[in-house]
Length: 551
Image 1 (cartoon, rainbow, N blue to C red):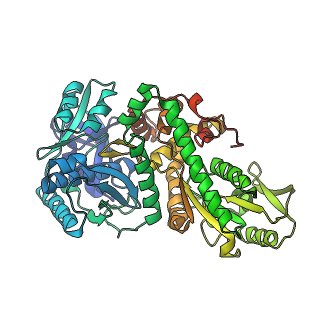
Image 2 (image 1 turned 120 degrees about the horizontal axis):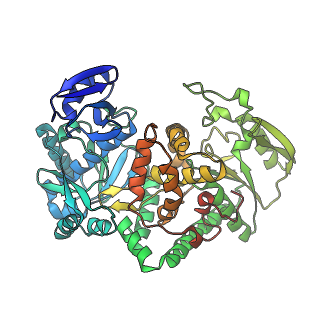
């Protein structure tokens, strides 16, 4: 028998009892479905068995670890359905590309019609597997055997990925004869994947899943066409240069041609920034360029580079940070935990901002504020502005696309830009890289360098940052006149040597340890690229240091 301690309870279970059985005994104490267990500080999939006395806790679908496990399992279940409905070749050539809202876009290559009938067939097969509670089995293969397995199945993206693995073994999941590789945990059987939908979209399908906030409800698809087209353009560019997966990138690093790739993509970004500048000037009456995007998007570097492009076209840009219009600290709203909520619109003096901008638009001379973050108050330090004929204000802040932020300004005087690091590089065809991972690593490296913040602190704050983005940025992104993807196809390889030492510092008893461990596993797939290879105006320099801009 094994003694299992859960909270204040102590129970005896026969050795060999699965964590799934134990979870069932405690499920009623949780407000969401249990997805994985934690045994003596180590995450355990529910099909694993108790072999000794231990202390156990659980992650549910409302927890990040549990929710990612659900998404991963649902994705493999979808690809199993593709395999069963349209054949193995269709499944192995499918690419899980990126997320759009709460949908994951899967491009199913081959002779597969992306229509409603196909979506219903896929959904129906998934539901059959769910009802049958088809079991997910996990098996450890020697590295060479795993490479041979996927070589035989013509899944060369996984074979190439494993070529750069340092471990001697690889875990492969199997459901009803269908094998695949995923980095992360799985649910015990398909019966857990109760909530999903499949709809046709463009050349593939959207796999719709519930949110972590409400894990038992699948919301209708929120079509974000501009976002999709921006990510598709980036995906196509990756195909053009032959880099779609981490294995492709590692091949490029080993070939010794990274310097050329870096120059090519930096030139591509500069070209796009130049095109945005030309569109701004072509409108003739734009006086306010409003730039918004989520945390660590590279807004500051982008605004500097855009300003340079505007100067080449005869304009005189002047930067304004919306943060300088923060209300005094004692007037800042607080969130449900009693902490200052710097993300909400009410944290800014919107009225004062509009008053100042209207005066500038009328040709008046205005003294603009500077927010002193140390004392939490706005100050006036003689920063006077008066717009001339060729002057443009480049305004940067998370609420830049919200009409309530600039309600008094004529619509024709504004040009709105949404910027984000929209990662389209995949681990392999079936393991996408969430865009939030890239931004989290960017912020972690930057905050450690500029603020002395620990990785643990950055991870601790990240859920609050993400809530602010969901509430105040993402709902307005489709209103942008232009979208700019600041992600660089090689940047995770550049961030790796900066991020890894920070993540290793997080102790095992910290709540943030599990996220740190996941990120370390994720970074282990990449070979490193030295930051010395980057030009000094690169957006990546905003995070690793060495930028020619004041960032």
